Image (tube, rainbow, N blue to C red; front, side, top):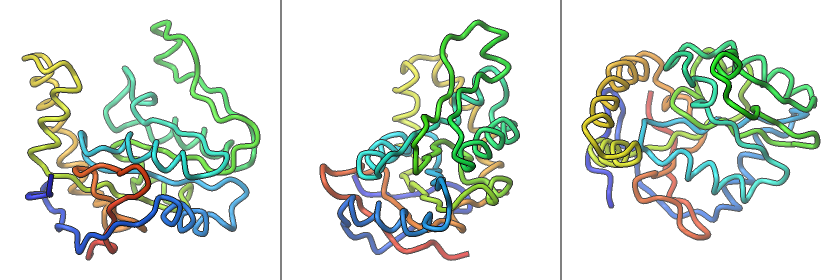
Length: 213
Protein backbone atom coordinates (compact mmCIF):
# COMPACT_ATOMS: atom_id res chain seq x y z
CA UNK A 1 0.00 0.00 0.00
CA UNK A 2 1.39 3.41 -0.99
CA UNK A 3 1.68 6.27 1.48
CA UNK A 4 -1.01 8.77 0.50
CA UNK A 5 -1.02 11.17 3.44
CA UNK A 6 1.41 11.65 6.31
CA UNK A 7 0.80 13.18 9.73
CA UNK A 8 0.74 16.89 10.66
CA UNK A 9 3.91 18.80 9.84
CA UNK A 10 5.71 15.86 8.23
CA UNK A 11 6.79 16.04 4.57
CA UNK A 12 6.15 13.05 2.33
CA UNK A 13 9.38 11.17 1.67
CA UNK A 14 10.61 10.00 -1.69
CA UNK A 15 11.71 8.80 -4.09
CA UNK A 16 11.59 5.35 -2.48
CA UNK A 17 14.02 2.62 -3.44
CA UNK A 18 14.52 -0.95 -2.32
CA UNK A 19 17.71 -1.54 -0.36
CA UNK A 20 18.95 -4.83 1.02
CA UNK A 21 18.51 -5.11 4.78
CA UNK A 22 22.20 -5.87 5.04
CA UNK A 23 23.07 -2.63 3.23
CA UNK A 24 20.89 -0.57 5.58
CA UNK A 25 22.30 -2.42 8.59
CA UNK A 26 25.87 -1.72 7.43
CA UNK A 27 25.06 1.99 7.11
CA UNK A 28 23.75 2.03 10.68
CA UNK A 29 26.76 0.09 11.96
CA UNK A 30 28.98 2.68 10.29
CA UNK A 31 27.21 5.45 12.19
CA UNK A 32 27.88 3.54 15.43
CA UNK A 33 31.54 2.85 14.64
CA UNK A 34 32.98 5.18 17.29
CA UNK A 35 30.76 3.88 20.10
CA UNK A 36 31.58 0.97 22.40
CA UNK A 37 27.90 0.02 22.14
CA UNK A 38 25.92 1.80 19.45
CA UNK A 39 22.32 2.95 19.86
CA UNK A 40 19.89 3.12 16.94
CA UNK A 41 16.47 4.72 17.44
CA UNK A 42 13.55 3.50 15.34
CA UNK A 43 10.93 6.22 15.60
CA UNK A 44 7.61 6.83 13.87
CA UNK A 45 3.93 7.35 14.49
CA UNK A 46 1.73 4.79 16.25
CA UNK A 47 0.78 2.02 13.86
CA UNK A 48 3.61 2.93 11.49
CA UNK A 49 5.32 -0.46 11.63
CA UNK A 50 8.23 0.46 13.92
CA UNK A 51 8.29 -2.87 15.77
CA UNK A 52 8.38 -4.76 12.47
CA UNK A 53 11.16 -2.58 11.08
CA UNK A 54 13.15 -2.87 14.33
CA UNK A 55 12.84 -6.66 14.22
CA UNK A 56 14.00 -6.70 10.59
CA UNK A 57 17.03 -4.58 11.45
CA UNK A 58 17.81 -6.72 14.51
CA UNK A 59 18.01 -9.77 12.27
CA UNK A 60 20.58 -8.01 10.11
CA UNK A 61 22.56 -6.35 12.91
CA UNK A 62 25.03 -8.51 14.77
CA UNK A 63 24.76 -8.88 18.57
CA UNK A 64 21.81 -6.49 18.89
CA UNK A 65 19.13 -6.02 21.53
CA UNK A 66 15.75 -4.33 21.04
CA UNK A 67 14.17 -2.05 23.67
CA UNK A 68 10.55 -0.90 23.40
CA UNK A 69 9.56 2.52 24.69
CA UNK A 70 6.12 1.08 25.54
CA UNK A 71 7.82 -0.92 28.29
CA UNK A 72 9.16 2.29 29.87
CA UNK A 73 5.83 4.07 29.38
CA UNK A 74 3.75 1.22 30.87
CA UNK A 75 1.50 2.76 33.56
CA UNK A 76 3.95 5.65 33.76
CA UNK A 77 3.43 8.34 31.09
CA UNK A 78 2.78 8.42 27.37
CA UNK A 79 5.91 10.49 26.72
CA UNK A 80 7.39 11.42 30.11
CA UNK A 81 9.80 8.49 30.34
CA UNK A 82 13.01 10.11 29.05
CA UNK A 83 14.99 9.77 32.28
CA UNK A 84 14.06 6.09 32.68
CA UNK A 85 15.39 5.28 29.22
CA UNK A 86 18.37 7.59 29.57
CA UNK A 87 19.68 5.61 32.56
CA UNK A 88 19.39 2.29 30.71
CA UNK A 89 21.12 3.68 27.62
CA UNK A 90 23.95 5.18 29.70
CA UNK A 91 24.70 1.77 31.22
CA UNK A 92 24.34 -0.05 27.89
CA UNK A 93 26.61 2.41 26.07
CA UNK A 94 29.26 1.81 28.74
CA UNK A 95 29.18 -1.90 27.92
CA UNK A 96 27.38 -2.96 31.08
CA UNK A 97 24.70 -5.63 31.06
CA UNK A 98 21.31 -4.17 31.98
CA UNK A 99 18.38 -5.69 33.85
CA UNK A 100 16.02 -2.86 34.70
CA UNK A 101 12.57 -2.76 36.24
CA UNK A 102 10.77 0.59 35.88
CA UNK A 103 8.99 1.79 39.03
CA UNK A 104 5.53 0.95 37.65
CA UNK A 105 6.60 -2.66 37.10
CA UNK A 106 7.36 -3.07 40.81
CA UNK A 107 4.26 -1.14 41.88
CA UNK A 108 1.96 -3.30 39.74
CA UNK A 109 3.77 -6.63 40.02
CA UNK A 110 4.73 -6.98 36.37
CA UNK A 111 7.20 -9.85 36.01
CA UNK A 112 10.49 -9.75 34.12
CA UNK A 113 12.79 -6.87 33.31
CA UNK A 114 14.06 -4.70 30.46
CA UNK A 115 17.34 -6.33 29.52
CA UNK A 116 20.45 -5.64 27.48
CA UNK A 117 22.66 -8.76 27.62
CA UNK A 118 26.42 -8.63 28.05
CA UNK A 119 28.17 -8.61 24.68
CA UNK A 120 25.51 -6.52 22.94
CA UNK A 121 27.07 -4.30 20.27
CA UNK A 122 23.99 -2.45 19.00
CA UNK A 123 20.92 -1.43 21.01
CA UNK A 124 17.80 -0.69 18.96
CA UNK A 125 15.24 1.50 20.72
CA UNK A 126 11.84 1.45 19.02
CA UNK A 127 8.74 3.45 19.78
CA UNK A 128 7.09 6.82 19.36
CA UNK A 129 9.63 9.30 20.68
CA UNK A 130 12.61 6.92 20.56
CA UNK A 131 14.48 9.52 18.54
CA UNK A 132 13.35 12.50 20.61
CA UNK A 133 15.63 15.51 20.87
CA UNK A 134 16.22 14.93 24.60
CA UNK A 135 17.96 11.63 23.84
CA UNK A 136 20.20 12.81 21.00
CA UNK A 137 23.33 12.59 23.17
CA UNK A 138 22.66 8.85 23.62
CA UNK A 139 21.85 8.05 19.97
CA UNK A 140 24.21 7.20 17.14
CA UNK A 141 21.61 6.81 14.39
CA UNK A 142 17.92 7.50 13.87
CA UNK A 143 15.54 5.61 11.59
CA UNK A 144 12.22 7.32 10.89
CA UNK A 145 9.43 4.94 9.86
CA UNK A 146 7.05 6.91 7.67
CA UNK A 147 3.46 5.72 7.35
CA UNK A 148 0.16 6.54 5.77
CA UNK A 149 -1.78 8.44 8.43
CA UNK A 150 -5.14 6.73 7.87
CA UNK A 151 -3.62 3.25 7.54
CA UNK A 152 -1.63 3.72 10.75
CA UNK A 153 -4.88 4.52 12.57
CA UNK A 154 -6.58 1.44 11.15
CA UNK A 155 -3.65 -0.76 12.15
CA UNK A 156 -3.32 0.73 15.61
CA UNK A 157 -6.97 0.30 16.52
CA UNK A 158 -6.99 -3.25 15.15
CA UNK A 159 -3.81 -4.07 17.08
CA UNK A 160 -5.40 -2.94 20.34
CA UNK A 161 -8.53 -5.04 19.88
CA UNK A 162 -10.55 -3.24 17.24
CA UNK A 163 -13.39 -2.34 19.62
CA UNK A 164 -14.79 0.91 21.02
CA UNK A 165 -12.29 0.84 23.89
CA UNK A 166 -9.39 0.53 21.44
CA UNK A 167 -10.74 3.40 19.35
CA UNK A 168 -11.16 5.61 22.42
CA UNK A 169 -7.62 4.83 23.58
CA UNK A 170 -6.28 5.61 20.10
CA UNK A 171 -7.79 9.09 20.16
CA UNK A 172 -6.57 9.68 23.71
CA UNK A 173 -3.07 8.72 22.62
CA UNK A 174 -3.25 10.86 19.47
CA UNK A 175 -4.20 13.89 21.58
CA UNK A 176 -0.67 13.67 23.04
CA UNK A 177 1.26 12.09 20.17
CA UNK A 178 0.37 14.62 17.47
CA UNK A 179 1.53 17.74 19.36
CA UNK A 180 4.56 15.88 20.75
CA UNK A 181 5.81 14.87 17.29
CA UNK A 182 4.89 18.22 15.77
CA UNK A 183 7.07 19.95 18.37
CA UNK A 184 9.96 17.44 18.37
CA UNK A 185 10.04 16.67 14.59
CA UNK A 186 12.32 13.60 14.79
CA UNK A 187 11.96 12.97 11.05
CA UNK A 188 14.20 16.01 10.47
CA UNK A 189 17.07 14.25 12.30
CA UNK A 190 16.61 10.87 10.61
CA UNK A 191 19.62 9.18 9.00
CA UNK A 192 17.37 6.67 7.21
CA UNK A 193 13.67 6.92 6.31
CA UNK A 194 11.80 3.61 5.88
CA UNK A 195 8.37 3.01 4.37
CA UNK A 196 6.49 1.30 7.19
CA UNK A 197 3.16 1.13 5.38
CA UNK A 198 4.53 -1.21 2.70
CA UNK A 199 6.47 -3.04 5.41
CA UNK A 200 9.84 -4.83 5.21
CA UNK A 201 10.21 -7.40 2.46
CA UNK A 202 12.02 -10.67 3.15
CA UNK A 203 15.42 -9.26 2.20
CA UNK A 204 14.77 -5.57 1.49
CA UNK A 205 13.53 -2.31 2.98
CA UNK A 206 12.01 0.61 1.07
CA UNK A 207 14.02 3.67 2.03
CA UNK A 208 14.17 7.33 1.02
CA UNK A 209 16.60 10.23 1.49
CA UNK A 210 16.53 12.33 4.62
CA UNK A 211 13.42 14.48 4.90
CA UNK A 212 13.83 18.23 4.42
CA UNK A 213 13.98 20.47 7.50
